Image (cartoon, rainbow, N blue to C red; front, side, top):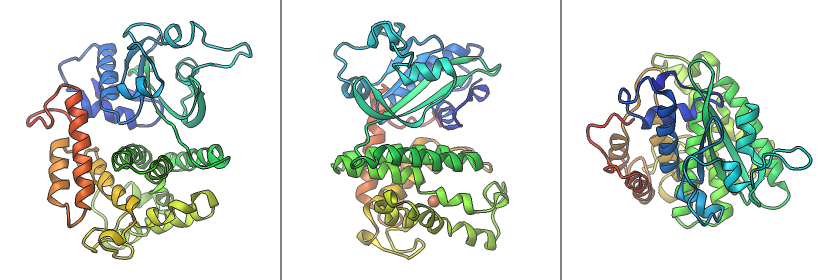
Length: 355
Ligand SMILES: [Fe+2]
C-alpha cells in the first residue's frame, strides 16, 4: 500500500513513510496509513514537525514543535490547525495565507526551504503534500528550521540554497531527498554537540548542499543501475570538488567550502580527495560522513533495498575510529536511540519491517 503513496515534493517523505510503516497491517485504508505515517514522521523527526490531514486537522505535532512555538496546551489530535493556532482564520486582511502549511495544503504548492514568519518566528519551512495513488491529497507533513544565518544575507542564502537544491532535484531526486535527510541529521548532531546556533545552521546547509556537484556528473553515471566501471568511479570521486567549485561562486557559501570539499574523507586518512586524517578533517565534514553513510544505508538504492536502522547503526559502530569519528558516531547513535524510545518502540527491533 505505502508503495502507492506519492509525494508531490520529491521522494523524501514517501521514503520516510516506507521506512517507518509496516507493510500489510494497514492495507486498504489509505487515510489510516497516512495518519500512522504522520505520527511516525513527527515522533521520529529531530526538528519541529507537524502532520495534518487533507482538511487541515491535526494528526500529530512533536514535542520540538510545541517547545519551538511555545505552545502551552498540547495540540488536540483531530482539531483544525486554523482554529487552534490561527483564531479560525486562514488568510489575513490582504488575502495572504497566515500559515505556510495550510497554504501548501490548499494550493498544492509546497515550500522548499522557504523563509517564512510562522507564529512570530522566522523559519525555513519544508512542506510535503502526500497524495494517494489516485492523486487525492491525504494530508501534509511539515518541518521547520529556525536559521540564524548571519545578517541580512540569510533570506538570500535560503533562496539560493533552495534554488541549488531544485537544480539537483530536477536532475536527481535521490540526491535531493538524501541531502535533505543528511542536513536534518547533521543539524541534530551539531545541536547535541553544543555547537552555536549559527554553526548548527551552517552544518545544516552543508548537509543540504554537499552533493550539489553531482549535477556536473553525466546522467548515465548517476542513474546507472549496475556497478560503476573504474573510469566512471573516478568521475564520481570528483563530486566534492565540483560541489566546492559551484558553491565557491557565491560568497555566502564560503564558510562551508572546506566541509563540503572534505565530506568523503575518512578518519583513518583513507578517504578522498586529500586523505586528511582525524581531527585534520573539518568537524562539519566528520559529522556529514556519519550521517551521509547512515542515510545511504537506510535508503533504497536502484540496486538494493534499504537496510534496517539497527544494521546501519551497527555498521557505524564497527567503523568508528577507521571510517568515522568515534565521538560523532556515539552521539548520533544516542540520538537515533532516543528518537525510537520516544515512540515507545524497542530501540532496535530485531525482526522489524521498519526500514
Ligand atoms: Fe558525496
